[in-house]
Amino acid sequence: MRPYEVMVIFDAELEDSDVRAAVERATGLIKSKGAELGHVDFWGKRRFAYRLKHRWEGYYVVFQARAEPAAMDELNRTLALADEVLRHKVLRIPEVAYGPPKTAGSPAPAEA
Image 1: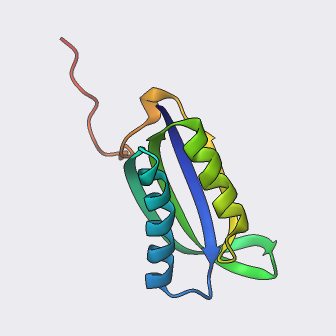
Image 2: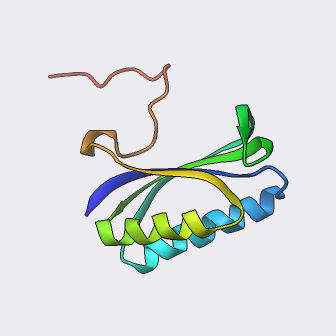
Image 3: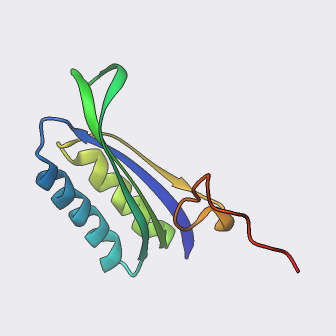
């Protein structure tokens, strides 16, 4: 299984609960294919630099998963066909980048 990062921009006209339900459907799809879900990060509603499908705002959600390529291909197709998704991107990430994001204030691990 390979590590992936998925960014999805949902329509801003959706309620927060609808966005969370859509994320649950997407993550449930890849879990049903044997994937393990990593960190899920809801960035909230943000304004775009330019119009995207006649919208100026959208809900950003970023999550990581470790899955087989076939499962991510199916997720990619599903997100492309979903009406509530304005834009999405599925990226394969390096193994060292998988996991919760590091905060700027946390100290580096001590070396022996």
